[in-house]
Image: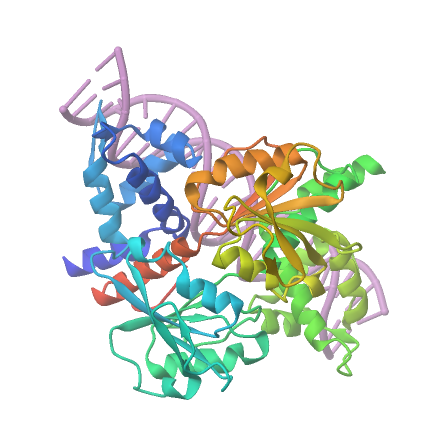
Length: 224
Length: 224
DNA sequence: TTTTGTGAAGCGATTCACAGCA
DNA sequence: TGCTGTGAATCGCTTCACAAAA
């Protein structure tokens, strides 16, 4: 049975996983608004996807729709939440207490999704000890091997690009199992560490590609 | 010829477009370091992709490699830059002067990629007039139809989710052609407006999915 | 010989279309 | 009748493998 589950978990397409948070968010938005059930086409409209895809996505998680009726909102929220591992609050640390690091530290959107910042680190001695929200900025050296509490599984890199790789190595040494990287750098880490990259400039550059196409009259409709 | 170009531009796969900024960044990193030419496999290693994919990606843009040798670094930078539309500096405005909006406003990574912030707006009267870097926070109502200079093509939404759609509508009215949305909301806009979404909480939730899998021993290798 | 550029094969995701159920 | 769950078809991206070129 465990093997069966294993196969099932591994088999959920990454594209589906990436959409689950969106589904969950839309469901939460309508929760408690006199709708106890929602059809795939209604939820598809809310999320901007098509109904068939939504049904297929949900079918990877199990069968919890009712034919002829739709999906029970509360149950669906529970199921998606279970798969996303929101049963417990996850702790993360941020390295880099620049503008971005501090903004992430104060970001309200994390906590109600089950994530909590547990530390903010920087290399600049001038910043150490300063407070950002409830947190005091600590020195990066406090992040040595085994110095991190065992329940801190996620590290966020908000450093300049030139120290991003070093920072990633330190985080892995310190025991994090996954990294969210905001630095514009292609990090190399052990393959058992899950890395996700968010590059703000890249996003604008992709937009720039489409604007360039528009300007030259090469394309009329848009994006992706 | 114009039609031919049109077809070509439209035909570049979105996945390829999304990788171009990364290629460009890696090329810039090695530019001027006594390497005037680079092979697809070398660049592939730097970017973390495979050589065949890199060649195919570049082949969508044209043929500028030399068989037996590789790609001229300077020329490749020029070509990718051309496709990404970095020939001129692009201006953008930010709506929402919270932590995230202010951090984006001060983000150093934009300007050397050819993007420049031209305005920062908020709805909170208490914030109006305050300075963030070189910029003074303006009231959101200054963003009415035609009130935006014609060369401002990009709007960044860093507002709370509940006003994100209204903000998007205002930006489009004001004349922006594309939107980078940081609010956790599925925006609906005219299809000629290019939208890209960056959801910070979603990224953590995707990581959460993998952590949940690890915890239950369901998966061993990682990510995507 | 080395490395590009590219048809062809392979693979995964999306969409279709309908059987299965309430 | 209405909507889910899902095989089958389709579409698009990635990878392979090799001919063409320097």
